[in-house]
Every structure is written in structure tokens, then in C-alpha cells.
Length: 327
Ligand SMILES: [Zn+2]
Image (tube, rainbow, N blue to C red; front, side):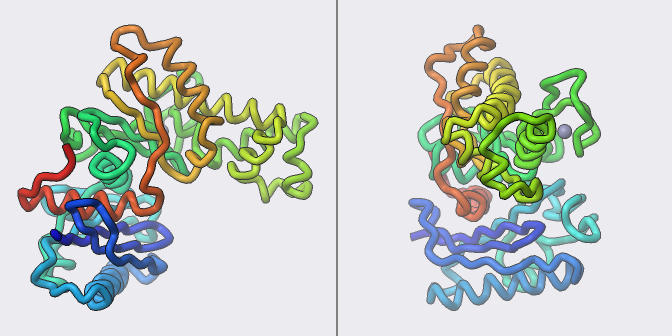
């Protein structure tokens, strides 16, 4: 058994787990609130304690642990293992030497990645991407993140910035996105975008079951509710999913034409909608991709759920130590 630690620093929670990187199984894991308002130093101290407690709980000797991988939601200097800009964390974490701090606390070598690249790597190594030499991952939640594996390697690109698949322009006249561009996939297909589109339909007077499901309170509108209504055959809800899936499908088609991946993995909380999202994606792909064998491409839901980031970071940390992971 080869054990590495994977850790995901999120805006709300810090998750960590000890992972057997031979089979991707999580041995022990736990999650604590990030409490980002306490500042980076306090957050990193608590992250170290979380990991120490997990190691103690696992009864695995520390010297048997090969390394630590940490993911974070934003831009990271992959050489120095410093956060450069985490827009969703209080104080934005500019130039915080996460790797150096955690090494001094734990004595483990640290590797870092952006959070969705970690999910991508985890799904490829041990989840829905297993066995595919090239894969694209779209993670749909509050935003739309992404990651790419080409020829059995995670694509990092210039400064680790490759893979922002959710910020491709899919409508030149589209609305402003949080990233500064207009008409990104994210403004059409993220969780908040789906809820907002359903809300717009309700305000326009569509007759829809959603109104009862949310007890006439638009604040209760979530993608899960829209999904529930769609499963009941509700016209507005079906239209909302069709729209979100269509824009995603345009983005998936672009990736297939540009990068030629064998498998596309749809991850994140919104992906729980399943075929409501997958069907329009597959339809768009069929209509738009002609220069690669599109009938052999598999478009599937992710498999690892909330563990994907932890497993991915443990596996990424193992690769930095020269271990062979995945295909
Ligand atoms: Zn954008």
C-alpha cells in the first residue's frame, strides 16, 4: 500500500484524506470549516492539525506517507507551491507560501493544483476517466470549472492556467461573466445561472410546477428543484435544462474539435441532473463535430463525487514522487 495525503482548501470547507494511490481508495477522511476570515496563517495551522489528526486516526506511521497534495480554488504558482489569487477566499490569498508552511508543520513534501484540475486528475486516475488516454472534465457548480488530460498527462499550460473550459465564449453577444469576459459557458450553465433562468420564466408568467415546489418563494429556487420539476415533465424546467445543456454542448463540441479527447466527464453538484444535461450535450456534439470520430466519444457523469479532489491531489502528489498512476 502506498499512502499519500490529498487535501482540498475550499471557500467553505477544508477536506483531507489519506489515500491508497494503488487503487484510489480513501482510507480516512474528514472535513472542517475553512473559517477564511481568520486569515491564511490560522487556516493553514488548522489544515495541518486536520491532517495530523487523520494520520493518528489511521494508525499509519508518518514515515510511510509519501507526500501531500493540496488543491485550492484559484491561481497557483505550481513551482513555488504558493497561492497567487483565490478570489473566493477572504483576503484573496496573494502569494501565500502554502507548500513551505505545510512542509514545516508536517515534514511532508507538498504539490499543489487548482481545485478543478485536481478533480480532473482524480476522475482520470480512478474514476469516470479511467482507461481513457485523453479526457476533458467540466465541473458544474457555483461556477463551471474544467481540466484536460491529453496523452495520459494533465495539461498544465502556461503557469498552470490550462483547462478553464467553462470560460470559453459560446455566445458572442452573451452577458458579462464573473471572469470579465462575455458569453462564457458559466453564465448559461452554472448552478446559479440555471436557477436564475427558471426564475425568469416564472416572472414571465410560465405555468410551471416549480412555483409549488418552492412554495412561491423564489429564494428557494435551486438546480435540484428545477431538476425535480423536469422529471415531472414540467415544460419550463425541461426548457431550462435544455438551454444549459445546449451551451455546455457547444463548449464540449469545441473541445472535441480542438483537442480530440476520447471521454468527456461532467462533474460537480449540477451534474446530478444526469440525462437532463447529458442529452442536449450529446445532441449538440452530434450536430457540430465532424473532424474527429465523434461516435466513439463517451460523454459520462463523474464517479468519485466529493472524494474526487482528495483522491486527485493524493495521486498528483504521488506522481511528483515518480510513482506511476493511471494508464
Ligand atoms: Zn467567464
